[in-house]
Image 1 (spheres, rainbow, N blue to C red):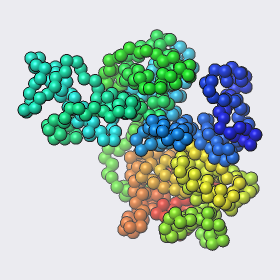
Image 2: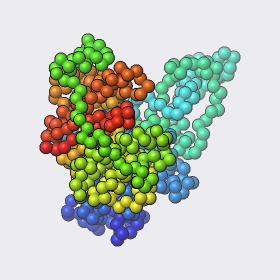
Image 3: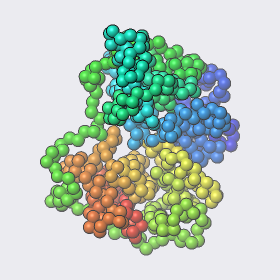
Image 4: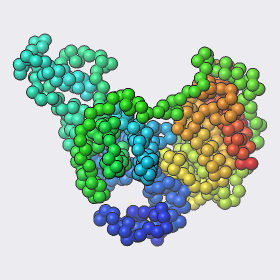
Length: 592
């Protein structure tokens, strides 16, 4: 992890001061070389992240967060030995399992954050405070009861209908071993057929094709897709065993062990119990559990809980609540804009501090320029114009020694320019997409930059200190997440928002953001503004683009006022020229 540290070793970071080195390493897997290391000994880029993390030998490229680290391990394992295709299949169809960040994916959040925290709270609570099953465990139970959608599910659902039909005929009294229907011979079974979903799931695990011995009935072939039976969960994400199951198993195991010790009734968790038993049948799971000193339980089969029983424990997710909505509200932006105008609220734009300033692109190395053969000349010009605006604002704020964080950095268009033009500052690029960040690292290496580092992680897993936060076209709620990070760090920010139509209530963020807007608009009315704020494309009629620009201004005014409530001075500015992007608003926020 540093020059003095051996390559590709596993390090554990104690959370307390009184950790026994020998005790910890003795109880770990015998075939791994493990060391303890204090947090202050970690490379600086790792100290800025939530663990677990994987860091490159040069200490400048860090991958942080459980899902990101596990996905990286799986990909590297397959690259080292392509014969281990079964390892790569843990990433699921199109290799997207737990790829979406927890901020936008309910499933990633449940596996990576909600369930681990819920189980930790359950294990550490006093006996009188852990009587109820944690809400997030019940949420997982409900998720396992939802219909499954998988690639090519139409074919599997028709097979399931044929299986159900065969099973129903077997249950009709008086039928002999063979019955005739529409001139065809139908096989009748003495015993219930195994779940088709189970057959499909485990045939893949054993590298076999699911049985297609029974020819499809013409009636079934003509059945509408909407009339086909839904598929049931076999594993966490659906039919197939994936990384999600691996992440959930240790947590659910600890929850079940603790519940059993306390004599708790698990009757309202039949789907989790079935999933837990099923996972144990996956080749290699029991062996891996033994290596980790996990003694897996043998649970009895439970009957599914009535829907109303689960409902008693459930609560409506905050992001779905739409309190105080006006049921007589008429859609479209004008009523909402008029409502705000009647309260004296209109979109306001501050004058641009340096509208004519521009980077001297012609005298910069090609690797600094956002074009570099990867985009059309027109798009590259607009990207340069966007960067002129952000870099100008950052240069006015930056001081030698400052740490500047480029959030949602993508391929590093902003961060690389800043690192090159501000050599006395440290620049950190944070991005969830690995390939984008690798491209940025390649460009940085070509330029020989030594004041830049890279973090592949969700925004929530960055907890470092910094002086300026910057983001170009942070999508939807990501803009609010960046502002929140900057406020927590008391850092200035320069942000250009994007994708207003993707804004919606989440676990962490509720809209409108500011008290001034909350007093006037409902959530639904604010969403109308967000939806129309996305209608600024150049091909739209000028009048509609003008309304879109006003809606953008109002949404961003709400954000600016919310930040000012945290003791910031915030300006909303139009980038110059406005034609550089349909999403041409820019925040400049300074702590007061």
